[in-house]
Amino acid sequence: MAEEQRVILEYADKIDPKKADDYIKVGGYKGLEKARSMDRKALIDEVKKSGLRGRGGAGFNAGMKWSFVPIKDEDRYVVCNFDEGEPGTYKDRIICEKNAQALLEGMAICGAAIASKQGYIYCRGEYPFVVKMLREAIKSAKDSGALGDFDIEVRMGAGAYVCGEETALIESIEGHRGEPRFKPPFPGVAGLWAQPTVVNNVETFACLPYIMTNGADWFAGIGAAKYPGTKVLTLTGDVENATYFEVPTNYMLRDVVYKLGGGVKGGKKFKAVQVGGTSGAFIPEQNLDTQIDFDSMSAIGAALGSGAVFVMDETRDIVDIVTRISKFFEHESCGKCNPCREGTWRCREIMEKINAGKASQKDIDNLMLLSRVMKNAALCGLGQAAPIPIDSTLEHFGYEYSRKIV
Ligand SMILES: Cc1cc2nc3c(=O)[nH]c(=O)nc-3n(C[C@H](O)[C@H](O)[C@H](O)COP(=O)(O)O)c2cc1C
Image (cartoon, protein in one colour):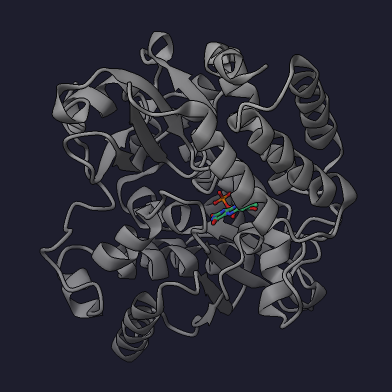
């Protein structure tokens, strides 16, 4: 299988994402029309039936998430997570740059499902040009009447990785320091300004117009049965063809590297691939014959995460790369909880010691213990996932550690 299957990106570079009329000419906003003609429960059931699961990392069923939102007198909000802070990930930027109107339509469909009239897009602070483009796209959609009474505002982050975590993101929109909240309550019950709030990823929202126009069964029939649809991937590192792709979710990881990616750059040998961004596991050659869908990745101890795929050739020093990653997590830890604040600091300290050739087996044992504590005790996914690159490389590339310890 070498072909892409483009759904969200079908009209990439063929329409102007800022112009609602361009999008309407290729069938845009028909899904929203259909959603608005449906009863709210039937709409949520249709999204549930499609099997659409979150594309931001946790893979939660989108329709199910919406069904938890209580409909009372209070306001409800639709929030799009466009923080995209994971190094190596830029798929949400591509979706906005190529098909921003599908994101806006998807948010309005969610608005129809939970009876909300206000949406917010929380955009990564490093993307000011996309913010400008999105504001123009929103104005065009409003002027054309396509969004009806649903309003969307864009808010910018300030460069903190933790603000991609949904409750830290909500704190940040509210104007507070970006730190995760304790859950429960989940945002669906008490989110933005303590009101019921749905937070979904850009790609999750962008799938919705196509589900509504082509039907839940059509979507459920694409790719992997338990994680259906397509996935936008970004391929980086030592491959010939480092760019973005949209593939069905039953696509094989080996084909991502060798067919889409054109293989390892300069004819060198493959060493590892890290899937899901900085917090993803390192996958060795023997696990390349795995589908990229959420569950298949979990089954090999990895995670699809944001869909970033980073390829490393034979010359890469795994311990050095993991040391750099541990510095990233130390820097990005918000400090709210002890296991992450202290744990990421200690991980970085031990990794640097190993990398410098000054560590002993005792340090590796401590690192493994620390990893267990962080995974079980950190407040949010940042601290829980920070040791994953360490664990996976100790498992699959232990010999690289052994070479460096005293
Ligand atoms: C440290 C951290 C960073 C995250 N960054 C992002 C992000 O940049 N974009 C995103 O959509 N989800 C991110 N998430 C996941 C969100 O908390 C949340 O699960 C997601 O926005 C839900 O949307 P979905 O169900 O459509 O995937 C992050 C989680 C953690 C713990």
